[in-house]
Length: 198
Image 1: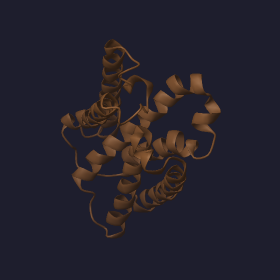
Image 2 (image 1 turned 90 degrees about the horizontal axis):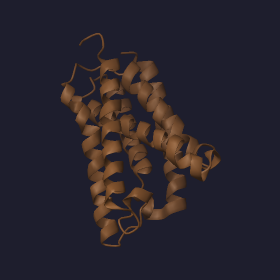
Image 3 (image 1 turned 180 degrees about the horizontal axis):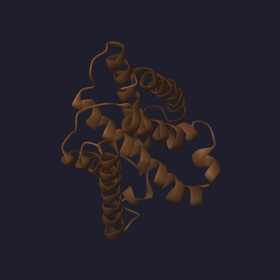
Image 4 (image 1 turned 90 degrees about the vertical axis):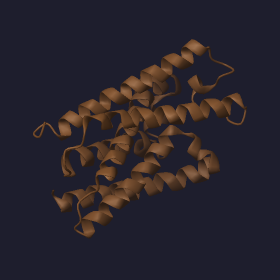
């Protein structure tokens, strides 16, 4: 494991994620945690800080940290794909990729997270079943949001979570799409990371 490269990349991630988090705090207040994108980026901030800590202490990265990184990396990749191919065509590329901290949340953060996970971190081979973790967490987020929307505590924040505005078939379809996307991405990342050990 190249500790210098790993530490450097994760320091960049931490700095950028702190900048994005501060901006989002001012922009959205406590409601910022409603967004899957923000949650994924905050998780990555915590993970990168822990990676730096373990590297400085010259200790191996715990398996649980790698699993959490799988969850955040896949989640961030999903945010990129949804923003690029679903939200940006309607809301504009500038808003989702160029303005304020959007480049960090939707592109730079996901890219650096994947680079760190797949090419810089060295951990023992983990069981293939970990590829289901990102989907499970994403679905958990979705179910909580659906309940809060049903109780009229939350509005969205994504169109397919608005239970009073969407048909059940639309909601189910999007849940299936995101679950399959998470599992597919996790499987690809798993194979890339441990291709020499499989």
